[in-house]
Image (cartoon, rainbow, N blue to C red; front, side, top):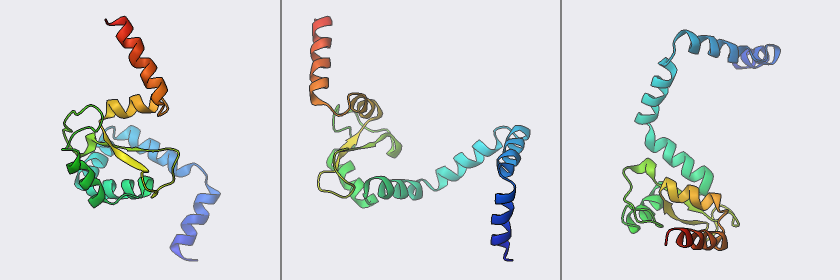
Amino acid sequence: MTPAAYQKQWRLNNPGACGRHSAVYRAKYPGRCKASKQKWFGKNLFYFKTKHLWTKFRLTLDEWFQIWYAQGIACAACGDIFEDLTAAHVDHDHTKQKGDQGFVRGLLCGKCNRALGQANDSAKRLRQLLLYLEKHHA
């Protein structure tokens, strides 16, 4: 039996054992795993960004940077300047498929992205919300 096959069989015979070992380690060394993960993530930011963009949006890093610079390194909705690469969220049309023309609409800041998501991408709901705000802040 190969080592990989043995390991697979052991995990099947001992469900949850790996999770228990991990939990014990994390309890014994609090913060060590998180610090290590953050350090590794920081060194491999472009790897994660590239993988995430392609998996979720069928967007290459070059295409993402084209959008980034075309928008002037700012949110497409409010115009706030992005502080770093992680501050820009890809806005996409939920009614289209990955890779379709117009699937990716632009880059938004976190606040605008969440607001749009909470409104279910509904222009009608956002207009009603704007009218509500104008009525009560006039």
